[in-house]
Length: 83
Image (cartoon, rainbow, N blue to C red):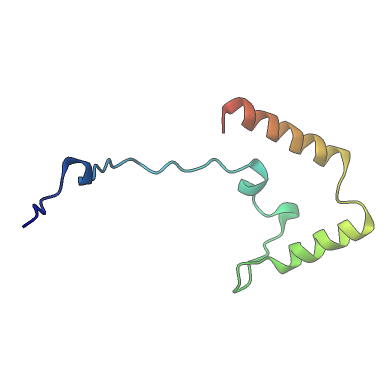
């Protein structure tokens, strides 16, 4: 009969580590913009916010120079931090 004892290569080595919590961008941590107390719906979506963003995109006012510069700055800071 064959030896069925697990070989050294079959032994699992488990190391418990604390799960790192990723840093969220500033725009996510910020409370609802413009003092809005909008509560997400049962599906977790803030439908009022979605409607406002869609209207701004349709009007061509969503992608402003300030938003692009802020996004660029966040991207560069994340790259420098090694994230």
